[in-house]
Length: 149
Image (cartoon, rainbow, N blue to C red; front, side, top):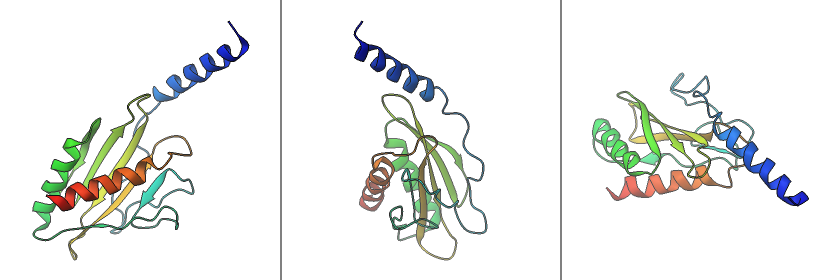
């Protein structure tokens, strides 16, 4: 085998090993003092609260009741490929989204404050550094589908 072929084989093998190491959700997820966790100083996270300027996204907004909005968002999440809701309460949803090729996991959090008709959002990769804008694009697709319903 050529020298470059060995490097590619090692790279693919290493990526597959990492994919198998998606592991448990990181500590600190959830709502703490009416806030979602802050984004780490990595470009693979976006959030509507506690995020740097390159990580900031707007919260989702809705009309009507909070339970109806939560149900609508759950329906949107259930339409996304390789995405599953893993926790749900009256004001919070946690979902996991897996990448198609290697199964990397991103954690998606949605908090519905009782005092305003909006949904605070956070989407972050569990591993790696760059996500090539995947989390940002996913939140914007969710926003579009949530608003359209």
